[in-house]
Amino acid sequence: MTQYITPDLRRWLKEQLQSGVKATDLVISMTQAGWERKLALQAVAELKIDGWFGKKEEANSLAGKLPEPAVGDGRCLLDAGDREVSVLATVQHPRVVVFGNLLSAEECRAIIDAATPRMQRSETVSEKSVGSEVNVARTSRGMFFERGETDVIARLEARIARLVNWPVENGEGVQVLNYQPGAEYQPHYDYFDARHASTGSILKRGGQRVGTLVMYLNTPKRGGATTFPDIKMAVQPIQGQAVFFSYATPDPSSLTLHGGAPVLEGEKWVATKWLRQGRFE
Image (cartoon, rainbow, N blue to C red; front, side, top):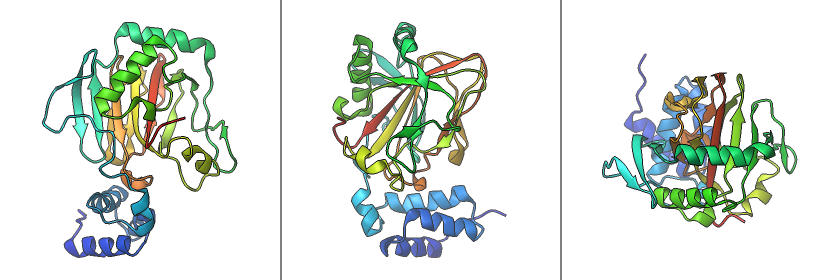
């Protein structure tokens, strides 16, 4: 049976948000009442975009203060300073933009070569203690470059800053990940969860994450797509291309649940750039 968000339901959701009910709790209530999760997320997210927040969430909202590529007028090419970048696909909500020609094959090779000697098992933010930990949901190897650590990294960071209209200093260092056959990163969110023990100390170093850029450094033979389960979207990992997405609030209504599908044949190399609210130290 097709489900619709009626004006009455919209008014009720708005009243709940205004009274301080959390968006995540509203989504849970709707799904428990039989609503499709995707529709519940979209309904709540649309209201939050319109400015209807609970008092606590309003302070944390970043609506209107997000990195944003200049794709609103339908342009196909963007000036990234030292090269033109193609716009291959866009989604309004969640804000997703797929780019082509972001990196050259030579730049991809240089980043892989510089990262290879420093690769270690990837970790995730610990939920119960301060720090990070190995997580079975993430089976890649990785490393971080310091911001501006090499000429190629510095050039890429300046390119990204111009492309998404966000200061270089508000970016974390580039992380390089390698996925061997069978490796994956199960669906997750990139914002820092307030319930995790490490979040308080992490936010002191530049505030909340507000955007992610996943760049593909090679092309595996099969598998390895970046998936967005809530919107049924998959971006294939093609060398030199990238996918950008942003999130105005750190909760599931952002619809930015995403993952790295298992590599089925060959290997996958990606570079990820996370963008913060403020200067990342």
